Length: 248
Image (cartoon, rainbow, N blue to C red; front, side, top):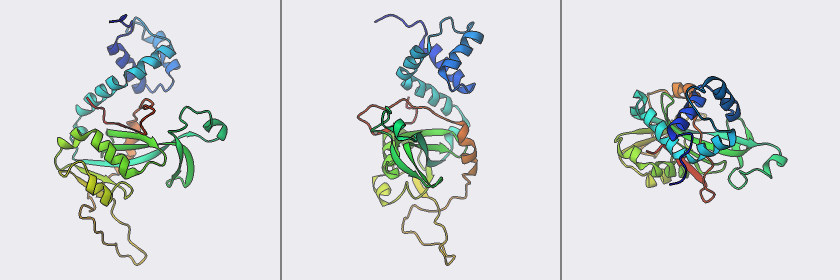
């Protein structure tokens, strides 16, 4: 049984949601603000170490609440998803890399968008065209995109099982024969980005029967996805890929 916590799970989730909505990135600053302005809502507020420890233990609960809120929006039923990744730089100097707790998980990788190498992780995100996150995976910088996407979909197979005809759009790094052969669902379509014209101005033909261009623009998703950030706790040491779709 144990001793009942002075801060209930409901109060903890409410605090975490309010912290995210009000834009507080520092837990210490958020707790100081809460003590000054929200004491009438929360009779007990822990110190920063205790608050952080409770949040880490409540990761599963926070994902359930987040998915419940996301599934209550109209964007959740969108029949087109886009998948992409972005680097999460965790350090630059060797002095920072060597003692880091992320050593062994974070690694050196290359970011083509910025034409430079970095040390850290890579966030793979599946979202709707409106920028609503559906699922994510946090991997090492060198993790294979196809394997990551397959693991992400396999870990959350219920998402595709409930969505026959779902369309998933991404660049060529995510799709190929290996992906088609091991795809967890044959009821959904996965399309690669249309090939760019070659030097002669002709578009090369593609042998992939699933590849075609989409008439729906993904520009809005790229513009709005920055406002839908998600956080994940450090995964278990035995796992090289951390996948989540806010599973209920």
